Image (tube, rainbow, N blue to C red; front, side, top):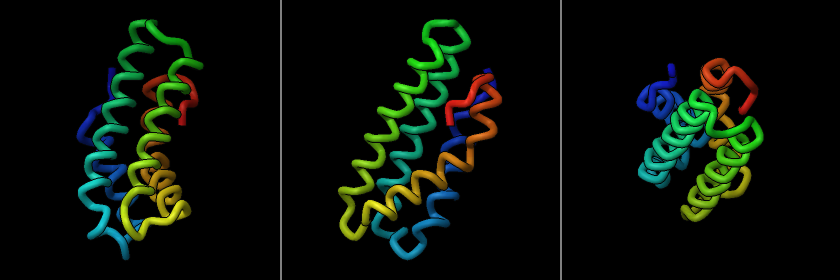
Length: 109
């Protein structure tokens, strides 16, 4: 297994910050927590795939559920619009897309 929780979390945080720089002070704490949750979810998916406990479809569903939860949290922050939350989330996941997909050996992101 090759995904590193801290590296994933930091890469996603940096990318999200770049997308919502004006609102960063309001969402910083939320973004940090949600980046960690997304990273934990991706590491868990890798572990479960590696041990053949889940299929590609189950992995995609697990990821989508966490993605939806993260988006809901970001939308709850005052001043965040749906577009801003989506842009921050997309930037975060794009930042780790190649690393995650390579580690899983299928396209999750």
